[in-house]
Amino acid sequence: MNIVLTALAVIGGLVVLAIAAAMITGLRQPSRRIYRHDTVIFAALQRDDPALRLIAPDALWASSSLYTLIGDGEPYWTDYLILPPDPRALQELKAQPKVSDLFVAEVALTPVPAMALGVLRLRHLLGLTRRPAAPLPTALDQIDGRRDVLPTMEAIAKAQALPQDLPVTMMNYLEYPAIAKGDAADGRAAYHRYGRQAMRAVHGVGGQFLFAGRITAVLAAPNSPDWQAPWDDVAAMIYPDPTAIFAMEQFPFYRRALSDRDEGLKRTRVIATQAY
View: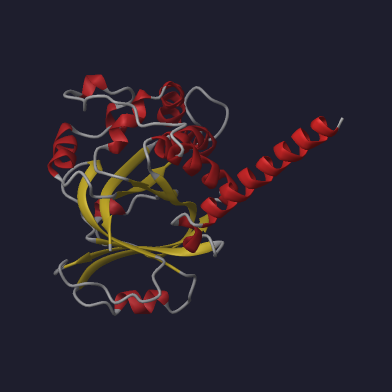
């Protein structure tokens, strides 16, 4: 009996340690600073002099564009900011030097438990999930899914040309159809089913979740017609290097979720950025 009780006590202690480790790890993720708030201000700026740093001491996150991963042409926006929900934020953004265009939106954050992020991160750090070894695609027909929501070969080449120890933050703009094709659920629900598997895959290649949320109000509409589309959500993930994102397709569970992504999206743009 004593042996059984001792074993149960050891197991219980290990479970408590595992839960504590997951929670502590989750609370140390880059998303936690953003998730101190339920709502944030998302801003995309086009500046005439990108070399000039923004004056944003209260920013929860800031990054500058590198290249367009999904979509056409070079990045229109030079900088991205995530700010606390301060009513003065819009005026402060408009006062930034040499800003020629601006998109500012209020975003209600999608709740993501710190414990879940901690478990995903720990699984990777402990080697329980590893980045699959696979060559980069050399043609689009080697990548599953709708062509209009896939990276271009030019984007893949740009990712390869960057320093391979450079962490990259992918900014996702998402627009959903009213009804997901072939599914009774709406587009957001279909995409969120994909998103749960994408979260696993991102962490599996060594990445981390930054934020995701619903645009609840546009505070400053852009001048560019290309960016006046009614975006529904924005989201961002951090990858450990520019090519890590391409390894996600090697996970079978991720490939199975691509049909939800394709059905749930009307349109998307993804911009690779570098945090500063």
